[in-house]
Image 1 (tube, one colour):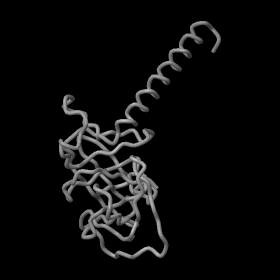
Image 2: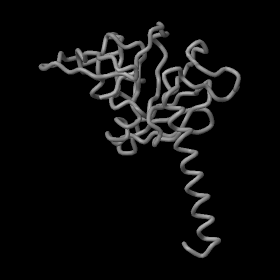
Image 3: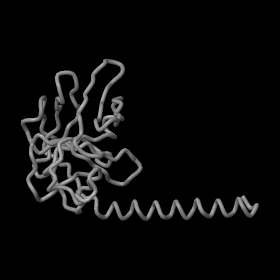
Image 4: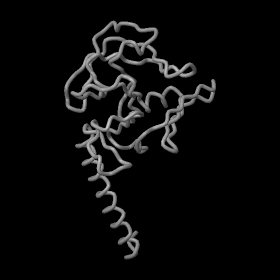
Length: 184
């Protein structure tokens, strides 16, 4: 299980749509309905390798039509996270387009739409990417690029992504040279 945590307080109305988080989770007990205490102890690690205990599990309504199931209550985290992977595992289609994200379930017509105030990352293959629906600019590493905001917690992963990109470009260049030489 992967949990995101930060030392700064964040506005409780801020949700982070996260492609690297394995479960929906919140530190705010008021976000839950049908809350149940876990029978056994469950712990998860964060991007800074610290451990946090999952205390309860329940449901959390996004609006009157969409309720996220199996939402974890983790009182020691600082961000409320919506897991793209968990939504897709539960048959919810998640789409990013025109500076907004949408979640809908075709079988029952449930729909959620949220306008984003910043650029988002769509690449699910990246190791850890999250984006706020209502970003607090103090929480972002880069403010010099007006459309791209990278969370401080992504610093190491951004380096990994850059290295993967360089490796891919080198591989593509090698394939092109081999094709030109007649070896591929």
